[in-house]
Length: 591
Image (cartoon, rainbow, N blue to C red):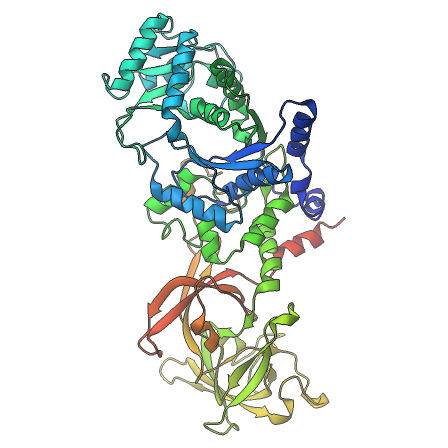
């Protein structure tokens, strides 16, 4: 069973720096180069264009590209697009956009398995001529029955009784060649015949029990149109596509380990370039589903707004949420490349994100749930400019000027009519510092007589406490943020939480679905927030730290607002909060 990596040994491993430089794949490649098996390194990233890339693909493509870079080799971007039922050009464009955003470039080496259809067909003919493939008339259900297991259990390896040979397994070579040619010409209905490899129906590895190489499907392909009505299966085309491109090391995730004997069988029988498959552990992330099939269900059934919904683990969703490519690359580097599957705590991903955002994000003040603060001894109409630090982590970021006036917006939770124990913010008679401004003393509040809701807080300011100045008798225990009512820009703010409410959403009780594990509080929309004026000029993708609140990014959405000058209200997404749970985990498990 997968284990969440919060143990001290794993924590120590994650703190050792960039682990891409040294791992078992590097050792394999060094051995291959040293033995003369290969004289160069050539890898590939081979997504199927049937969905958008997610953070698991981020690990895969980083392994592919980084291994090529480390050995001064090349890495192809190849689309394994041999399933016309599910693939689309929009997915191709989304994948290319995400790969480039993550900081990787295939440098013109863009390939498509669909361009190899003729090449693959000729190799299939070659295998038929060797007596190692045959045309079968059994239906898909019958093939599964003869193989000895249901289709959905095909990854099971051991303790399975031997399968049964198809009654068509011993057709003569010439008959198989004729039938295969007629399959291509469209003489038979969909599903009427398949081409199968002749391997071993008694093999403990179910994938070696005469796997299907070609099937008949009259679906229009997004690139080849209706030129073909037979399509190669993944296990047949993938190794032979690797071979055609001269791929030395076919790096893939651990679930393909069972496929490796079949990968090697097709290369051997087709007598092509001997690409080598090496498997590594895939990324498993707590509170997250990393499967295009299940993510597609969320999109199609509108549990999310689309592939780029900021709650989705897709690269596009993470980008819209405010993640940086540097944070994602650092996260993947830190968890490293292992041979065994494990569960990585999502808190560590957020830790890597905060580390990056803290260095690059300018600070601003914004108020999400506004309550008016009126400074009674401040002259009406008077304004001041105060100086604020843009980023204390970056001295080159400089300072900015912010406007201060008689009426301010503060967070509603920064005032209490009757304070609870250890509450140090505003309440009648208490003093707080307004960030970058003055110490104020709460003198009272206004209440709606009908609802009893507090509508405004009243205070007096102490002129001698401007900025960071304060006499000894003005020491306060709390500083709160604010924005000037007269100068603030209206915002919509979207607070995102984990899409799933349980750590392992795919481990569901009997009779339940992963959909039942969705977190109903994964999105909280705040339609009437306020922020510093600079936020009104932010471009989509601009990132900020809202002081005391977290890290936020300007979304692509802009809303109509008749009450605001220009009539436009920008939308900001919370990327991650300021609280770092990962460091707390480390403290608890420190050795």
